[in-house]
Amino acid sequence: GRLVARIEGKRMKKPVHLILHAETLYIGAAGTGSILAYDIPDKPPHGKLKARAVIDGKLKAPSGFAIGPDGDLYVAERIDQRVRRFSLDGKKKGTFIEGLPDMPEFLVHVPDRN
Image (cartoon, rainbow, N blue to C red; front, side, top):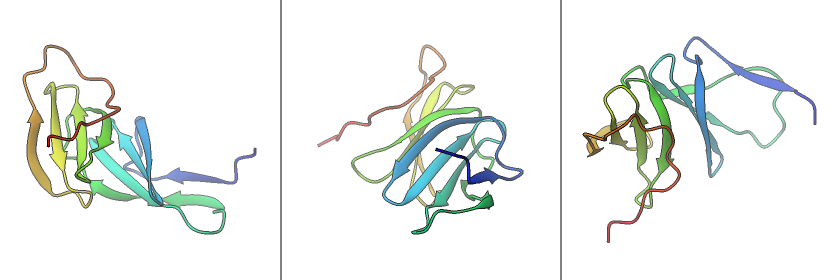
């Protein structure tokens, strides 16, 4: 393939993780403590693209994230050694796990709690 577009912006510093969920690409930006989202258009994009902030600067070194079976976003934070829970529109829903013995790096799966 060839590069036809690039997602850029002041919030896009140190991208660490990507998730494609439905028609939206979610991007973790460790350098700004943010989770960004880019809604993929029907036609191939061109040039410089902008992603919207879902969680804007509220995270301490996000290192990975996953979307759980409940549709919520679970974000690993390296500095606070925890996993936080947010709605897909960025509303804080609390801490999922805290006091981890090491800095979390990556989330792949969040189990169903039922």
